[in-house]
Length: 316
Image (cartoon, rainbow, N blue to C red; front, side, top):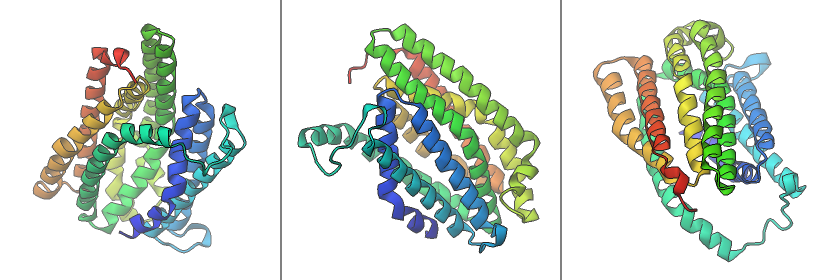
């Protein structure tokens, strides 16, 4: 609860960050969003390292420290994006950020209404899932938080290639070239898989060393080592899911990635977490095994949808 309270203070700049990045990607500028998100994640990781365990003389704030790091990083990223758009980055210039075009607002509301509803359902499932993690105690929760921060490094190239695939697919379809859009997607997926696999290998072979960068409690490191190995093994699968879903969104097939996420969150993640964590007592390893299975099904669904070719004929 403390984590959510702290992070919620940056809802507005976080929204600016996400919308601004989407706008820049829409005009073909994938480089700026990549740099902004890279900086945001680096700041998040650094502040988490400093504040969770009290490194370099700072107070050890635990979960609250992680929340403060996330809030500062997201808030700073949002303000940076706003500054770039006010200066006219990539031809996009906010001349009057307080002026509202009701016609455009109405269209955006209609497009986003369904997605918002599904997002609420997905995040409700994730909140329940966090409850399973909290039930394991502070040591397991600290290990899980450290693993998430380590894994976020691998997400950087994954999200970057997903954003690139989304933009290039939109450009390819806009030029009436579905074959080129498909080729862009496959190439982005191949490169993304290579990058995330390489990072995943470090998680598999050096879990204790990586965890020790974020926590100094031997119990936390021992608890999280096997789960971090599992996180490393799933990185190529995550790349497939990230990038193909990004390609689908670029084609205008925005409903499918969210529908598949909704299906796996409620149909796989929660029931499996209850079975492995509550019934079988597998602890944090059960949490990460659940997540690995969930991510695998998501990737398979994305592959099936992409292979169907329906995204090539969707009208936006």
